[in-house]
Length: 202
Length: 223
Image 1 (cartoon, chains in turn green, cyan):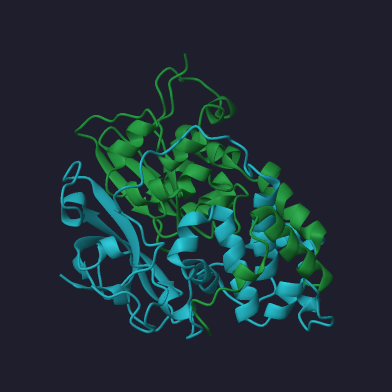
Image 2: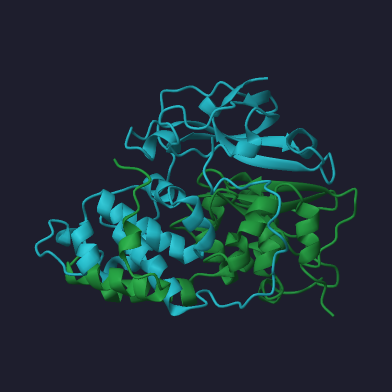
């Protein structure tokens, strides 16, 4: 197979026109159904996103049996809640504590647990995050306004295979007696990547 | 030698902007690019590793100047031509040749939900026994892809020739260094391997911090 052979230069240079030209060509060739593209976009815009991961985190906080299952076999545990699919075939949950903070990155591309968090944000896919998260995670966290105690160890997970990681943040104080639904409402996408903590309610 | 995408640990990238717009697809064509890539992948003419390698094979100049989804579209275009799905002439004239034999593989809208929900697991049965145990110290090899010069690998440059320890064994997974070049899935044991920051970087922020990578058995030898 040829390598380093760049046919893409034949297309228009403006990216929006480039995508449109390619879509039109593939649709006219009978290889792509434009309604299928609409369906994919709708799925990741409205149906699959960080609200899924937040439910997993909240359940792990309130349900000891689920928590045990999650850390024993996350793929099965989240699949039982209906969360499985592309880019989430092999899940591992990693737990933050007073002594360890977890941070997820993909230095080689943009691997991310789609069924639980959806499509990654722009900064997760940026060169700066990919380059720096492994070497200077504390500097990166500070740019998110997150400061850890010096004695808290950081574990950065570089997603180099098909294993996908979900950070289970620490449950903030002041949330005793909250329902799962209330708790899910304060779990943010960034906290499940590890760039932020879950904030205590005001 | 490495390719431009292999940027873990690189200096000079500047600050991260965590407060960018929250839209899943900030521009409509971003979603189109993602969806087109998934739908074209459904034609079955390449696998995930080939697809990743196509983006990695962009010239360093293009890789740096292109935005994220521009890389996807450029990679997809190269894949379509390199695999004979469209010709260079069709691309340059944007005039389709009729009767592609792949038409019957078209991903239809009614199957999208099922396809996205069923995923594509990478674990496989394998005759290759796992030779490392949890806690064992291992050293990564210094070479990238040993099957194809300049080929796809998931052993980043920053973690080559480094010593760490086995955290977890994940069973046997498809080996990207082989699968990206149509040399077979060649499944082999996959491990999460931990490294101390002090063993990876000239100056670690905190020497006790750790970086964990998922690495295949043939990347590793006993330390």
